[in-house]
Image (cartoon, rainbow, N blue to C red; front, side, top):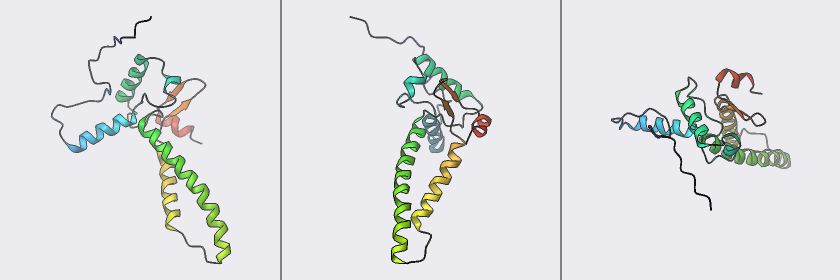
Length: 158
């Protein structure tokens, strides 16, 4: 029977590696820290085990992301990115059903085309997705490399 692994990585700071001030009771500072925590790599992401094989590599990625000059980039394996992708999946499914039905039934009733409130919402959602993609890192699944460099993200956005 094998013994369970006991991690020997020193925990001199929190595992978020985000700067923390003892006296920061401000709501905005706590929200900003929580938001940055959601933008960093997350162990619960479905692709996490493909890119990070050990806890040490995972903690190094968090540390380098927290201290880099591109701290505002959302990690592609973060909670925020995962939640956004799930939201976009449902938005696209609804849009793929909504637009054909709108085009089909509009001709039957002979009404003039009006810019519907639902379409306005879709336009806002999909425009925000395009803007958000400029601030989400890129992954290369074959090379197991994650890019958090803003210039490279914009250059390879297609």
